[in-house]
Amino acid sequence: MSESAVKVVRIVKSPSVSEDLSKVREEIREALERSIGLVIGASEGYSVEIKLGEKTTLYLVDIAQQQHFGRLLGSKGKNIGALRTLVGAMASVRGFRAIISIKDEDRFF
Image (cartoon, rainbow, N blue to C red):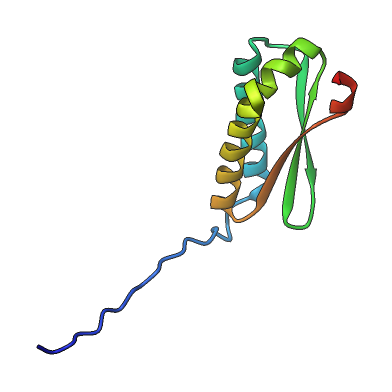
């Protein structure tokens, strides 16, 4: 029996040069803001800001009430962990890194 060579080809999708990253970052911010509203069950009392780094985008979440903070975190941090995973996946497809941070979270402890 003859050995045949198998060639493995890996296709990596790179972000389109024409894709406007500021528009993508804003769309992710809006999606995150809507998701947070659904998780905490409120339409007010929170906001999401964008802070840009060289290759990383920071989504800074500001929560007004401790009750909303608890709902956002979820049991053992599952809610915020899921949101971080989702936002990270949306950003990595576009070729940048995204981090969700809660503004002044120490005030709730």
